[in-house]
Length: 140
Ligand SMILES: [Zn+2]
Ligand SMILES: [Zn+2]
Picture 1 (cartoon, rainbow, N blue to C red):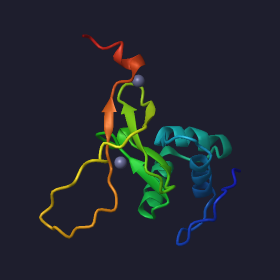
Picture 2 (picture 1 turned 90 degrees about the horizontal axis):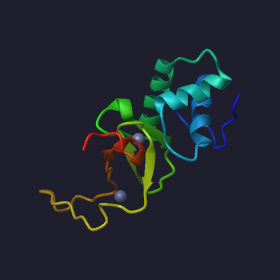
Picture 3 (picture 1 turned 30 degrees about the horizontal axis):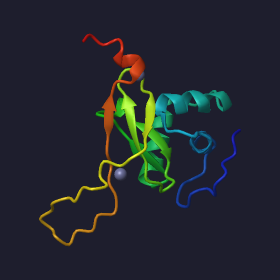
Picture 4 (picture 1 turned 90 degrees about the vertical axis):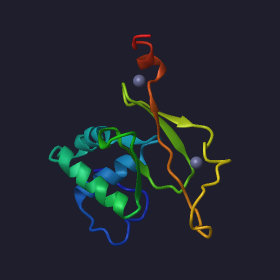
């Protein structure tokens, strides 16, 4: 079984499969989609189901342990540990490759809000399209 490096999150019941999913995310240098997490977790726990992985991920997202970024729909959702870092990704619709962005499109953006005192503490930006491998196959 994979051991998790960080302390087990408070308020979450510890189960073998939850620990497995968390360990997969902790050990991954880049965000993963649910199927990738499933296949990595399955190596250590052959009894885990994809539907279980989705349920565990939903729970972790709700608890703020894991962040979920989705390009268009949940089939393209990618998950990573919530490390409170400011990062954005572009996701390829063709092969689901995830490419990290070096800049932030929101840097010079001031939201216009009716509530002038609204304090913005974060944002999400979703970039999707085709990577150079997949884009090459598209009709011009
Ligand atoms: Zn691609
Ligand atoms: Zn940003």
